[in-house]
Image (tube, rainbow, N blue to C red):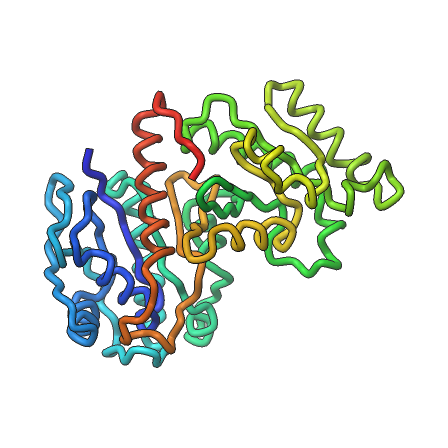
Length: 334
């Protein structure tokens, strides 16, 4: 089945448009729909010296021919110079995301892939914006979402994300962890089509607290919740020391890991999958993946940016969409 996948290139002066244009030069088995300014894409293709044909969306999704993209127009306020951001175009960047959300909610699109965005430029335009994830949750009336990064053979979800380390311990409450684990378990069942998802839960402290000698959060908060959810039929193991959890002994028998904080889990994942990792937002009423890098303004228009992360984000979104449509097919790691 040919899927229809929405792609928002993100910051128009960054590498998002470049990557999408580069990626479709040999065609694509699914229909990628750029929600962007058509003229901006044509101008960037010319700057890159690459072919680009834009086609309108028809009733049925069709694979892309070489150098072809489907388009849902979203006009910018001013012409774009690669590498030079302007707040004048920020409303159009947000409008593109809004169109993508609407298209996912009404099933026009099977999934959304977001390119790198410049939060500072959007805020400079007077639009309060803390990030894609928070915006997608708010616009889709989703009360809680979970950030997960994935690469070949490893999926890591985060209980807390962009918090100072000094604030993490107080944020790790039973209520928070229960929300995260219920979302992670549900998404593994429903979007990843895993029948009995095996989830490893990191401890917060070194050596998972060492029986209370190095911290008590494992005893007071994490262990009781793991026991409670396992009694409901979850398949959780933990809390485990993070320094031994990320080894084949454990990972070979797991579908996902819940890390307690950003730098507990992501350095391992990025070491294993640098340049080929994808950010997935769990808990939304649609599938959303994203690149794991920024706008790289200095590379915009040069043709030197690597398409690896965008290619993987699109591939992963397509896998999830296919698994969602055909839930009897178990989605493997990677």
